[in-house]
Length: 594
Image 1 (tube, rainbow, N blue to C red):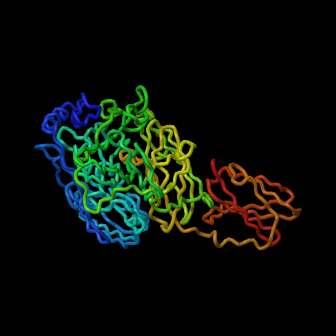
Image 2 (tube, rainbow, N blue to C red):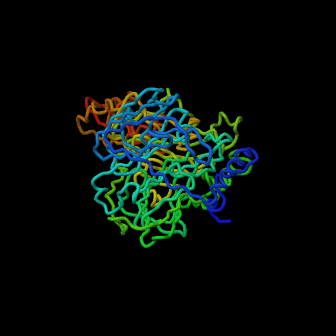
Image 3 (cartoon, rainbow, N blue to C red):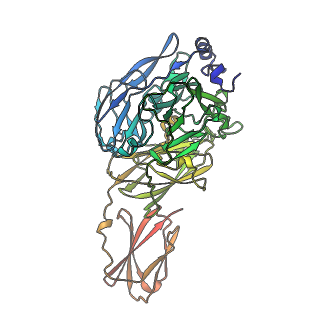
């Protein structure tokens, strides 16, 4: 038997005691497909800035002699690729013709909360949603999919997902492939499960049907030149450890939210659900040969969904051990290489576009998120690998705002994973740059603009972001696990970005006083001191970064140095206003790492 199951035994053939019926049905279908491959479907293109989209139901023949109910946008399955350009004023008309409500999130695009398409932007059956926004992202690969409360996994799994490509002048000037569907190829990787009625099954670990662009067992007629692949992990749960047959070298040119500053040579690239990456593969001189895109998942560490094991002992996901894909290598896409095209690219550039990460100067807030198993439900499902999961011991509530921040606030988030499962963590509204992984330097393939990061079991990541351009006092952005079943079960929160209020109106220092604060940054307490003798009453006021008064008190100056407790204040930047005999001094300090 080939080490890549897909080549010798069709991977759709899953025989488990709980699913004998579907296994036998798939066996009969798979016998007909044993030596067959299907031409890779390339999603059609819509060029902006005006996009007319219809969410609809349909059927798709994934297997011979049978059809499966599916959803699509402007078609039966998946969605057209939307081509945008930086600076475009986009106008989208999205009509919902389903008999259920839906939503549509523009994953990775920097748009206002009103246009973001989260759970609060419900599109009822028969209704049309009309988001309008300017494209503020630089060139990159993004995607769109539903994001309704509790309905993301069912609707994405049934087919509602599509790619967004943003071009800009700098990217178009690079000597890299640009011809969509020829040498610039969308690769939407998904795994699905089917029940005995050939319906797409949700929230099951039997996702043994692999497909690219909705095509099972796909091949692509590739030209013998440099190929650009836009990789998207659109699966609900599964992580892929991407590489090519014979460990052929490839070159990463972009992370989630845009191009790198230089190419990175790799033989493996891990993609978690929601993550994207653009890579170049040199097929020149390979006319008449074939090359396989492989998921080398036998190399995944335990704890990653798709590895040999998640959890340990009896503490594992219910049907996980029965899925024979877990812990195995398998083929994703077969490239049948033919003649080169006119205007072919034959070289791999070294330099790409300048990249300016957010700096840690002027950080205003420090936040901690803990991905955890909900203790309150432990008696029902008492395992750290099955969940149920939450964030900071809470699940999503549409009526609860988990925190408020301000426009232009620069923040450092630390995400701790206290479960036995690796979770892909995603934020809406802005990209981020990783600062640390496991307390160490960030791997090179993750050094770039990101909006999804896989947090390993019992590990942590730290990233920096800044809430630029948009503020809305009512409509929130989301943060959540991008394993869609986890998201639907409530592993999500929401936050408001509002304009700073009041801090600009605080009185400036009217004279030079000699008060000092230490330590800075602070954790549980600060100490107010003076470099000169003070014999009068002091008025102290503590303001947060939004200008909100936290407390006010009077103290005798002869009490200096004065220890002030701050353990009840959240991480972030604060101002201590000291008033003394008509003079005012503002002392800025930071609370962090609590």
